[in-house]
Amino acid sequence: MYNSKIIGLGKYLPEHVVTNDDLSQMMDTNDEWIQERTGIKERRWIKEGTDDTSAVMGAKASRMAIDRAGLTKDDIDFIVFATMTPDYYFPGCGVQIQDMLDMKNIGAIDIRNQCSGFVYAISVADQFIKTGMYKNILVVGSEYHSNGLDKSTRGRGVTVIFGDGAGACVLSREEDTTKGILSTHLHSEGKYADKLIVEAPSIKHWVPEIMESKEDLSYFPYMDGTFVFKHAVVRFSEVIIEGLMKNGLQKEDIDMLIPHQANLRIAQFIQKKFGLSNDQVFNNIMKYGNTTAASVIIALTEAWEQGKINEGDNVVLAAFGSGFTWGSVIIKW
Ligand code: UT7
Image 1 (cartoon, rainbow, N blue to C red):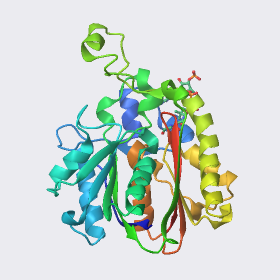
Image 2: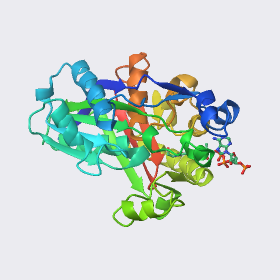
Image 3: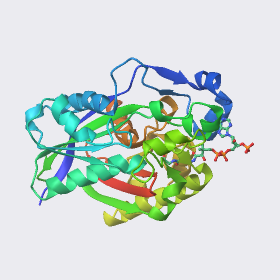
Image 4: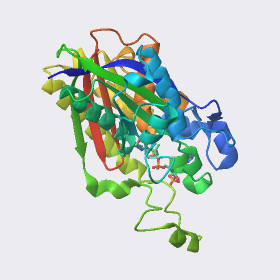
């Protein structure tokens, strides 16, 4: 048995910044409401006319991660790609990365677990490495939300939250099983699927049906925000404690917590509950909004770039979102 270890991190954010004031030109919202309820000041949205998509952004982040790992594309054995906004209904974005990076004919899978997508993706990759099947796996999280949001006042409860972006890491074999990813913890509760959902187009509810009716808005994301918020704070706490207990760690042992960037208020609630200082929790939702499957890996990359994660640190990743799905990853850096 081996452990897996992150040896390279990368990110890509589209250049185009959309501020809260920009949104108030499109819909009835305002900077004060958005900042007070979510902590978000601005987000990045892909500008019309550029080539960026979930796969393209994922490829850009991947090149950076592979480069920083000191590897080449030919050293990668497998691709795991997390997104809820793939370029195509099928095939997934993983195979596009294989092509865009001109890689060998390695395997590629997509993970569709929304806000928990990256935590699920890294957990899947970890299993392949632990068993010895693969040595180096590229794990990507990328989202292109902005093209699929309702930018009228009708959609304001959801649209102001989401941003576009991508992150990637290279997970590699680690012989010392006291280092790297120590454990991962995954959960779901499908009875709440309709609380945060993009219902269509789906095979149950296909495009011609939607086009027949002007009132059918099932292709826009729907969220019962308050309901999701209440579940998020409970599940985040539970799954972090589960991970700590599994490894005989106390909350005081956390050097860096990277929560999924859903809402700054959720992260602050968790921070307070665990008695963590500002240096022990990393947030960047203020700049990027909620980038769903990309949020944890973008935040992890930035925390590392800023020198906030050092060798030997206990790093905890945690996420909660649509499904409901939630999970945590405990890492000895
Ligand atoms: O990442 C996946 C998991 N997602 C989450 O964890 C998100 C969890 N939920 C949340 O973050 C919060 O519920 C939101 C930020 C989405 C919403 O905050 P809230 O405090 O729950 O607001 P609300 O939906 O209860 O709406 C309060 C009021 C409503 O007006 P009335 O009915 O009180 O008159 C809304 O219509 O705020 C109104 N509102 C807005 N006003 C200005 C909703 N969206 C906006 C907006 N600007 N963008």
